[in-house]
Amino acid sequence: MFEAAEVGSRIDKETFKREVPAVRSELLALQREIAGSALAPVIHIGGGDEVGKVSALNTLLSWLDARGVESFALGPPSDEERERPRFWRFWRRLPPRGSMAILLGSWYTSPIVDRVYGRMDDVTFEREMRRIRDFERMLVQEGMPIIKFWLHLSKAKQKKRLAKVKRDPQSRWLVGEEAWTYFKKYDRFREVAESALRLTSTGVAPWHVVESTNDRYRNLTITGMLNRMLREALDLAKADAARRRRRAALAKPRKFNVIRQLDLSLNLPVDEYDKALARQGAKLARLVRRLHDAERSLILAFEGPDAAGKGGTIRRLTQAMDARLYRVVSVAAPTDEEAAHPYLWRFWRYVPRQGAARIFDRTWYGRVLVERVEGLASREEWSRAYAEINDFEAQLTDEGAVLLKFWLATSPEEQLRRFQDRQTTPYKQYKLTEDDWRNRKKWDAYEAAACDMIERTSTDHAPWILVEAEDKRWARVKVMKTVCKHLENVLEG
Image 1 (cartoon, rainbow, N blue to C red):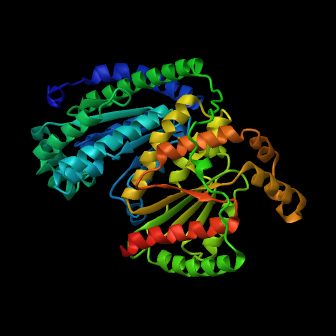
Image 2: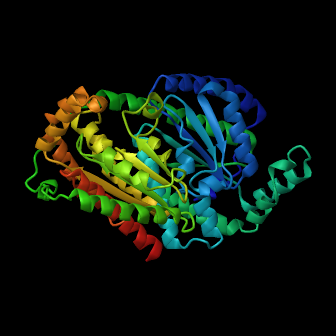
Image 3: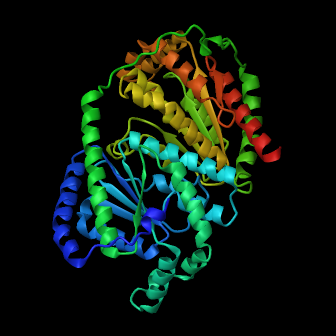
């Protein structure tokens, strides 16, 4: 794969000087066009030529308008990053729509290094590459073109480059002992890198290998390629906007409705409820305190119809927990900042570190529920969201999160009774909105969408637990017992 980047390509000073003005002007024009679009390109500069990567980055930053681009040189993860799923640090650095990000070091770095040093086997490496492919495809579908450059030097050129930099007092700081350590494994790095590029060079996010021996050739080649790919991304976005029209996709009633199989007559007397709540609350408090020592976290997700009792159930859970260890996240319509990023970005922000708990009142399932039913997401967007959500949850649980998802089910008759109670009780009136009344008219569509969601996203690592919530006491105790049981299995099993 790298042989074509070892032919000695060069650009002389006069040619470089002559071509740069047009290339720079085109780059700035494209950047201005991106600023007025819904795109957010991510440019990855990888490869073994550390000096060349810095030179390429500096060139791009000096030729671009600084107001529309941000760069990140990613080294080893911090303690905060190590206590969360690996992709958390990358989600935090994704640019908002209308701007660009340039990455030195990315989601490729750790798997390649770990494979070279034998800390990762072939099966795990290929699984990581598949996850990267899925991640990049999702970003591209969300309007984030992924543009990837791999800067290559032959072994002899790499050795010569390192020695030259080491002799130069002004550039010596660019190359540390780690670079020489990696150079000793040049052949193995080359082998693993070729495998990574083959596995992740896709139609939506191809790799571009650039010979890095000559600075002028490298920097002008990268900029020229970048201009071409940004133009293609802009043209494609315009074509897609003209072709796609968002429309409501109301779910049709299903022949088999898993929610309607629940026995909503289940209830719990007051005296039994008080005893069970106290007993399970004490157990929950003890188990949550043990999360940190076990290097685990807890994520509880709640969905269900309006007035199903999500808020009351969450309050009973948090009353039993140390306030320093949990946070409740109430999900509403996205803010302008959140809407400017890929859909899952705002949920990655709240991923807890080890030892902590997050409780979501409404969740990332809004895309396949309210956005689907209300026509706020296109069919393409909500259809692909099932796989994106499953992958998101797999990453959480792979890194030690205990993830439980609860659907609190009530009948439309019970919902109406609770609405009327809110309407006539002053301190409950804030809970009732016009949207709540409007959504009742789409009860069957929401229920059918929920059945699709449960069927397509209930997994062994992140199961949906259906809760009979016609009786609030029954629902609260069932949820608390379920959380305790799963934590016991994880922490004590």
